Image (cartoon, rainbow, N blue to C red; front, side, top):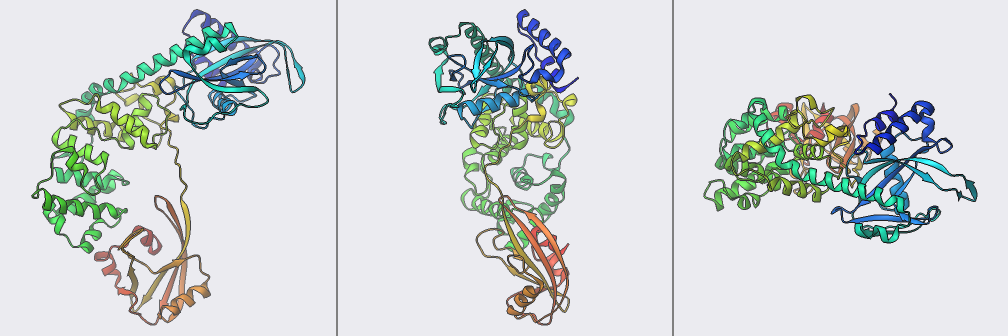
Length: 533
């Protein structure tokens, strides 16, 4: 079955008339194939419309169409494109100039056979014909600017849904608009109920299906807190070893608060994002100084500790103290987006805040910690971040709108607003008498106060690299090899040209350490270790 046939066949008619229209369209597809996507298919062809509502579903964005001489929805010809939803979105953007726009659902909301009167297009006569119109429900914020498409529309405006009849002169379209509005509101109501329906299903599923992880063996706040900080940006399997070694060296908050910085950074080496462990220690010192060495129980007090954000505070409060405080991370956002078929950008802080509020409204007064871990677990092992979700194993598939509408692969939507800056650097591996040159980075900025290999901006040629080494007073003797490496930070990518240089002098500008000391004592970030590797 073609993509087009699958899309039309997936539409579930609401009425007998829609079932007849669907059958007629499928018969046309059987006869004409994908030609029905082209406007020169005289027997009738497919158009795609997007009915745009405001997020609160009380206003609609409509255009005055020159062809029809009336206010109406956005839409246009498929023109050979079987991605019907994509066509509806494209036409809506072109006709209204809106940029923020997303579907309420992947599901087709209506298929209608609509007659088109004879008209002119770009000065050429177009005879009367039939549109098999496929409609999707779209959502757009009312705050963004709108503008008409000059060759097709005269005006674009937001109307209250009750005002449509005042401006639309096509009487046969009013019932179509009314049913689309009604169906969009029914879907929105269904979505609003889903967070509450998630909870009992996950609490039934979690006891028999969760992983045995070391930080789940007790509810000690220090253990939960440490694991949550380590798990930020790091895979679970990688964290297990770090977690055990860290607790072996620093078994309680007092030990963490008093730990020398070099030892602390060495324990963290390889986990990256070193400000996390610095803030971990600052928070431990705050607990010792302001809370008498006892981790606070109140959510607000936990949230005030250095390095603890909304997610971590929610996790600690719920897991350790059974407070009804959701902890919404990427796993939870993904589950919520798919269950509710929510096409909003989950990287938008407002969307995350809204999903958190939805969960907070239905969080149980008991078993809160178990629910927090169940939400995270289902996203980590079933509704997975990479690859297809394991819907056959999911306890939520019976209520999941993305599963029902075959949109799981499209969700969650993650639209980043910034691009990583690319920086070229030349990194030196200077060796002398079996020792390697390292130095401390500045106290502020990227990788603050960590040890690094000497490096400079830009990509140096071999003569330029030798000259730089001479300027440091290291008496370069021989370039042994060069390597090319890349390291990606959150907002910056380093393109690194590594130069391995044997030297005759060990200037005091650098600390010269043995490979064994570099391994055991000095914390060298992964960005530089990858050059050594």
